[in-house]
Image (tube, protein in one colour):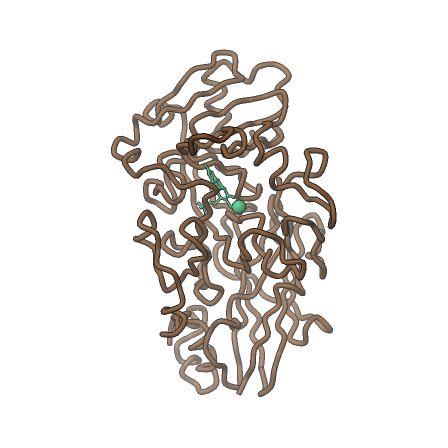
Amino acid sequence: MTDSGPFLPRRKLLAGSAVALTAAGLGGLSAQARAQNKALPAYAAWKDANALTVHSANTLETRRSAFGASVITPSDQLYIRNNLPPPDASVLSDRDAWELWVEGVKSPRALTLRDLKTLGIESVATVLQCSGNGRGFFPSKPSGTPWTVGAAGCVMWTGVPLRAVAQALGGVADGRKFITGTGGEKLPEGVDPKSVIVERSVPIQALGEALLAWEMNGTPLSIAHGGPLRLVLPGYQGVNNIKYIKRLAFTDAESDAKIMAHGYRLTPPGGTANASQPSVLEMNVKSWINSPSDDGGPLKAGRVQIVGVAFGGGQAVKQVEVSLDGGKSWKAAQLFGPDLGRFAWRQFVLSAELPAGTHVLASRATDASGQVQPQDRLENVGGYNNNSWADHAVKVTVA
Ligand SMILES: Nc1nc2c(c(=O)[nH]1)N[C@H]1C(S)=C(S)[C@@H](COP(=O)(O)O)O[C@H]1N2
Ligand SMILES: [Mo]
């Protein structure tokens, strides 16, 4: 039961009503839920099955009640999203031999991971979030995985700053406008490569913070998360963070791969995706409550610590408010835990008395630039970028 409130003195936890949170906070799967859950795929067999909903072999989601109260998401609980089956684990047998082609610099060439490790080193904590996180709340039921809150985590990366790599190769070639990363998966045969290859472009402004990472949460990158080498773009939606990166190019134009030209576009309802619509790039201000949660255990009336996470994409979190009445009134929550920088998420808590009955608990974040998490989602065909506080509210029943 101490797991429910590491920020509370144990004395208090033992004092009666604080016990209320215990079942919800632990996040163990019921026997029934365990039986319904699909098995972990072989490449992710090391993951914590209890913490994850397995939608498919290539889409695994962290359960809301499994998010702990510490800032970094443990690797074995982190979601996975692969558009293609991941490469064979044999590519990790000699990590340092992995080759990255760097183009659109004055002296283009291939660099091995061994080379990259000599060019510089940096660590950054970022929120890694699928742009489809929250899709499950769209009443329009967009096609794609119906993620709720768990296609996200806060992760510590280590690698070489991309700008150091560009510098070592003579600098970015003149006039280049985009950073284009290409994934190293084996492509299925008999189809147009452009229709399946994972290749994304982001504005060159992202160069300032971009990292080529070989380590996540203190261990060499797993196959599940893009090992041996991954592009990390702090503040940008998950899809732009190219795993198994084999080519990094500074380009004049966006990639014409389908995943860039048509995929991941904010297409208005009823419309067809095309390259003139905004792509999913920077993340928006967002928060949600993890505990108590609607997939945790029963709650008893009394004092609870309402705990969640908040992030601003590229902006720091300024404040978080929590509502106990579905958004009619709001109270200031407290940020707690270490501040790992503007790309990480912050933990928040509101201590509240919950009487017996049904309660709709919501959270609303404001970032350093004053952007407030909106009540409503931006409707779009693909179900992207959902940061509606109303959609992310939890309904809890207190006995
Ligand atoms: N090479 C490659 N990179 C990729 C993907 C992919 O399928 N292949 N999926 C993207 C998407 S849509 C997301 S949300 C994140 C998921 O990262 P994770 O599996 O490490 O959580 O990786 C992105 N990078
Ligand atoms: Mo994604």
